[in-house]
Amino acid sequence: MRYMLGLLCGLLSLIASADVLIVGDSISAAYGIDKEQGWVTLLEQRVAEECPGMAVNNASVSGETTAGGLARLPVLLQRHAPAIVVIELGGNDGLRGMPPAQMARNLRGMIAASREAGAEPLLFGMLIPPNYGAAYNAMFESAFRDVAEAEEIPFVPFFLEGVGDDPALMQDDGIHPTAAAQPVLLDNAWAVLASAVRDHCEADDV
Image (tube, rainbow, N blue to C red):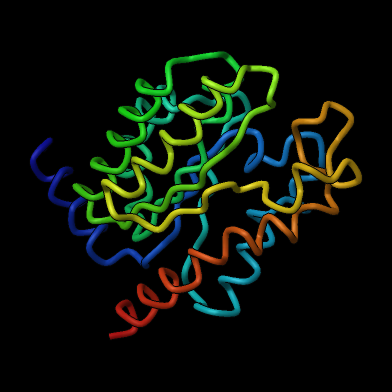
């Protein structure tokens, strides 16, 4: 019986549409704003126009770290069988002062797991406030870049580019973007997502 269930799950994953899985933190979970205003919902709308039938599954959790994402990812990959995995994690690692080297290992683990499941991984980087010190900030920033270069994956160096330095686009906590910032986040994401979505859409059509 267990063998038959496993075989059925395998067959379902083969016939599943090429979907996008977002594994992120509060930035992608639309913290502090209406979920319908979040950049992931805006992404769903754009993907529906670009590739009808391709779903966007948002598995983002506020407060999530790279360790948490790595632990949750195997189940998410099995459940959604995505073609594309967006990794938007690391900000909470930095805010908690966690070792950037450990964060990098977690990110590489998520990339490896995504590839083993037949999905294309994408990495969205983050910066942290300067009060953590120049040395830590430099290590934190380079950890994302080094992982992206070593793994040769599509990479957004700073997901909050054009948002994080504009108080009008940030909530009062200075950490989370407002609803008005979400289209900018979508544009930042789409810079690397566009080609991946189109490539997998064409492959799915074939």
